Length: 121
Image (cartoon, rainbow, N blue to C red; front, side):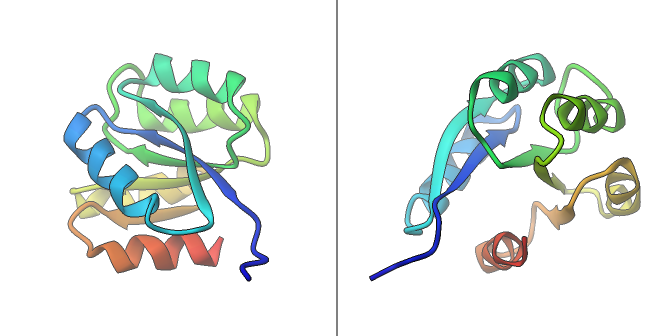
């Protein structure tokens, strides 16, 4: 029997194929539930206000707002929210963590890296 709590996750990426791949992989895990998806910053901010999520997988280049400002707004809306910033650009790593992201993940990383990042939170 699995006694671990269910993790409520929001997916935020402007590419539907990326969101679908993340959803498919995470739904194979017993302790993750995708509670919403957003394709831009406005949609994500609306979702955070409506959904009981504890974690956001955030495309660092999400359209609508600079990610640095978006992270601040997300934390204002839900102070305990954990954010894993994702980018195909390695140079985004430090700015993402400095902006308040909990972790950073390369979009090219294997799925196991995502699971490790989620487990470490």
